[in-house]
Image (cartoon, rainbow, N blue to C red):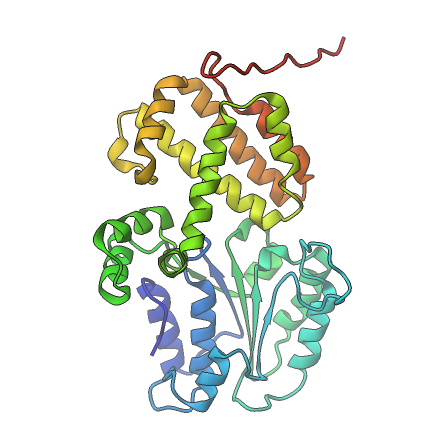
Length: 347
C-alpha cells in the first residue's frame, strides 16, 4: 500500500499511469519541505518493482529491500553523493560526478527489479554542470529507467530540466488531517497533536518526527527562545550569535524560515488575527513583543528575513547574511539596560 498521506491528486495520477502502463521516464516532485516527496518517491520505486498483486504491497522481497535502502536498482542522490570520504567541508551542490555515476548505472539493465529508479533529493542543488549533464539522460532516457527529481525550490532548476519531466505538485497536508493522524494512529494527546499540527505548516514528516523525538521540538523551542533574547541583546552579543551559526546552509535556511514564521505571528497579532498564529505555545511572548514593536518594524524585518533566504539560495556568505540580519533586527530602547552602539558613518 502507498505510505504517502494527504496527496490524493498525486497518488491518483501515479496510480492511473501504473494501471495504463504509461509511466513517464522522469518526474519532478514539487512541494514544501517535509510534505512527503521522499516517501512518494520510494512508494513509486516500490510500485514499479513490486512483486505483489496490488503494487506497492510493502511486503514482498523487493518492497522490503527498497524501504531498507538495500535495493541495487534504487539509488538516492543528494549533495553528499560521490564525495571524497576525506572531504569534511559542507557541500552545497550535487556534483557532476554524482550524475556521471547515475549515467553509468542507468546504462546497465536492472539487476534485481524491473526498473532502475534514481531519486535526486534536493534537485535545486544540482550544479550547472550536473544539471546540463543530466539533460542527456532526460532527453534520451534508457529503457527501464525512471528519474525522480525532488525539490522545494522549483525556480532554481533549469527550465530545460523542468520541461523534460512530468511535474507532480505535493501540497501542504491539511492541519486537521495531521492532527487526526497524530491522535488516532500515533497516540499523541489532543493538545500536543494540535500544537504539532500547527507548527508543521502542512509538513506531515515534520509532525511525525516531532511526535516521536522530544529533542526535535526542544530544538525548535530553543531556537525561538534565542531569537527573542536577541531582541534584547547588544550589537556585540548579536554578532557573537551570528558567528556561531557555522556554514551549514540547510540549517541556516531552516532557522530563518522558523524566524519568519514567528514574525508572521507577530504581524498577525498586531493586526488582531491571533486565532491564525502558528506558535500557539508562545502567545504571551508574541503578544508582549507585538505591543512593543511597531507595525513598520515588524514588516521591515520580515522583508529582511525574506531577503536573507534569497541570498542563501544564491550561495551568499552565511556569516555576512546573519550579521546583516543582526543589524536589521529591531529593538525597543529601554526594554533592557543594553544599548546598541551607533554604527560608524562613512564620509
